Length: 333
Image (cartoon, rainbow, N blue to C red; front, side, top):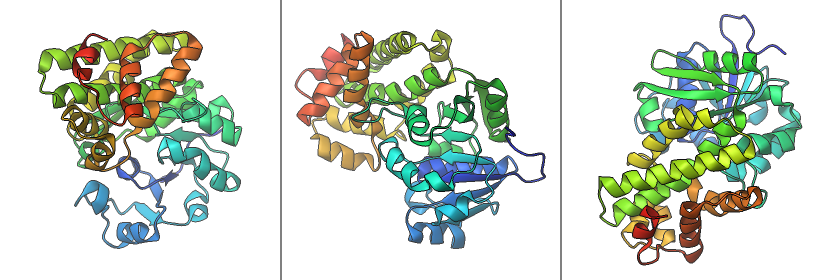
């Protein structure tokens, strides 16, 4: 199966015009590709076409002319050599169902991070189940990828993982530009696990910060979160080395330490005593860790893996607020 044809300007469809989808479209355009960016809302597609901006998500960043926006999925997917799925994980199954008859026989790159509520499936597992695509077409992309920084072309790196090494290398090359570097990997499961659990850990680190604790406490929670993530990944069959790389500790450091992270912002609000609903509103977008925490815990239970830090976060989510003493318990989880 050809990855990207040897043409002067391969065509990529990016389905989802949120912060990460729009920033990734910019990266692909900078790498020399023609990009069709699908937006669910026609008014957003019109803004992207006419103003070249996505103000709600990326402020005044101007998208390259090579990014063509549309609210018509069929138009976006026509003749696509590569398909990038950039919708939130909890909406991925539903959206894929509407696109199923339109998808070309091209690699499917999943940007969604998390665990599907109800099924406990990671992003590429959802894609595989809905599309019946073989593993050689499934690609997980994850790393320290804060969309606002990437959109402003600040240097960043990521991992593109596929069980087929040639496809992994091809996708990594396709999304490498002057400011964005992608490394290939064959550990799809490890990249999926790391991308899902880091959101939960970012909530936990945010709670500790919001409660007024310092760098020692934040580092302890991050380290415990990495240990739990690694244990789960190994139990599920992932490569331990993945969690020491960009998709593991790299993504954790970025997501747990930056105010640009919605999961971190929500955790800080919880740590300051805000109810969960208020914390989610303050985060200003999808906070995947809230949905993923109980789903990760169920998946861990099935695998026989203890994850006390994730358990504490899941309990707080279920209660709708951070219980008294949660920050101290997270440090000693």
